[in-house]
Structures are given as structure tokens and as C-alpha cells.
Amino acid sequence: MKLCKPWKAILLDLDDTLYREYSYVSAAFEEVAAYLSDRYGVEQDALMATMQELLITNGRGRIFDDVCKQYVIQENISHLVQIYRSARPKLSLYEDAEIFLKELRKMGVKSAVITDGAAGVQRAKIEGLGLEEVIDEVLVTDELGLSKPDPQVYTTVLEKLQISANEAVYVGDNPAKDFIGARALGLDTVRIIRPFGDHMREEAKQGFDADRQISLLTDLLLSEEDTI
Image (cartoon, rainbow, N blue to C red; front, side, top):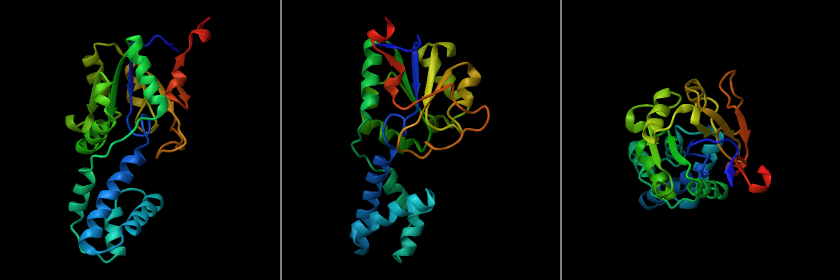
């Protein structure tokens, strides 16, 4: 196998790029539901169903406030957020992501993950996926007080990998922030659009989209037959 372009490094987003983020969200909801059920005697399955419905209907932000209001629960919301962020579930990479990362190792191509979000939560995901065993560099932007699309996010990783921007590609799913900073530095950019994820159906603003789109990470690989 070889890459479709001779990149020396692949920089990757985490959530919904390498695995389905909802698998973490659901597991963390389970932790909160178990706590509330044990303390207030509300059926755990009902709490889970309500939180999942609120996520679909209203998105993130006030789920715990709303579930407590619905079930007339007097609870410190910050404590529920802490329970959520303390979840340490075992997670699984998408099958194509697992194959892709293994092929990068075989080819000697460097790899990195760049992820926004609360540092503790993102580290829990990285640990649950076992990523530090298969990725050369992991950057949790929150630990540096940064976030995408700040170009420093990408230059920090490139410096650690000792790779120039024109030798690398960044792969992500969110057109609002994943590509504009990377493109400004001269990285190639690829947007992955999967069946599930918060940003899969978002339209990119002019100048914010990636250079190309794929549906699987393995779309960036070519077999020997393809190169003949």
C-alpha cells in the first residue's frame, strides 16, 4: 500500500474522524444516569433516554440542567459535569481508521492527532482508544490554551514531527475550524464525511472547506494494483 500523495506526515482530528464520538458521550451519560438513579431513585433507563433525546433535540450545553428540571432533581450541575468528564470508557476506532493507522506505521509515515475540547475528556478518549500506542504525537489543544483553527496548533505538531507543512496533510470533519488554519500554513487538507457526527452535514463557508473529501480514511491509500 502507499498514500495517494507522498505525504511524510498525516495530522488527524479525533472526534468522529477516528471513532464515533457518540460512543464516549453515551458511556459518560451512563455514568451520570447511574449516579442520579442511585441517589434519587429515578429509573436509570429513563434518565438515559431523556438525555439522549435532549442531545438530539437541543444539542449540548444544558442537558443536565434540563434533565434535573424534568425529574425535579435538586443537584449540583457542576458535579454532574465532573462525573461526565471523569468517565473512562473503553472505545473502539472505526475499522478503516485502525487499518489506516497500521498502514502508516508499515510505510514509515508519521502521524499525529490534534483535538479540541476539555483536556480531561479528550485524554480519556485517547486513553480509551489506545491511541498513544499507535500515534507518534497527540496534541490536546486545551492543554496549551489554544484551539483550532489557530495556526499555532498545527505548527506545534509539525515542529514535534520535524516535518514541513507542505509535506503533510490534515484530515478532519468540521469545516468551521479544521481546515482554514491548516491551509494558511500550506498543509493539504481532507474532509472526512461519515454517516454519523455533529458536523457531517454542515456546509462550509467560502474558503473554509478542505481540498478534497473522503468517506473513509483508507480512501487515502492506494494498493499496488492501483499504482501500476
